[in-house]
Amino acid sequence: AHSILNKPAALDDHEQMVMQTHPVLGSEWMLATAAKRPYELPVLTLASEIIRSHHERWDGAGYPDGLSGSQIPLAARVVGLVSVYDALRSRRPYRPAFAHARVVRMMTSEADGQFDPTVVAAFISVAPRFEKIHQTGRS
Image 1 (cartoon, one colour):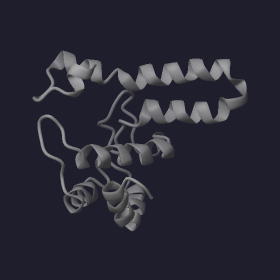
Image 2 (cartoon, one colour):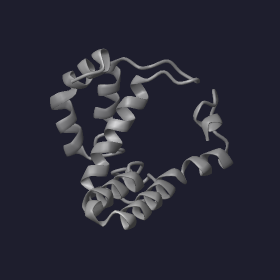
Image 3 (tube, one colour):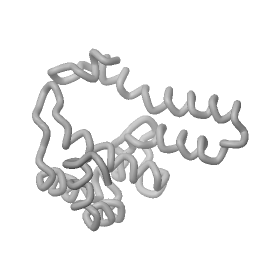
């Protein structure tokens, strides 16, 4: 898995398939954990939903279930956007980190595509705080 995450080139079909299994595997692991910890069932169930659906897209082109719009749990829509922000702001083996302003423009252009427009609007309203957190590592 680390070799796929750190690969300096585009993923081939097999590697892409392996990457697309992590939401299901992570969600199943979280549900198994929840079964052993009934006193934490609500939060672990929510965590499982987030893990499973954080790569879904508002327009339905995501994975693993091809959910769209409000079918995607709200918490997963938020975490999905934050995950993409972090990925774009971070250097990767195949590209440099993008500047905050560029990432904000990219996310704005994906409102109603990759992202829930309402979640994007909420992100835009606090985007300067994301930049500060990125720069300082604390809120």
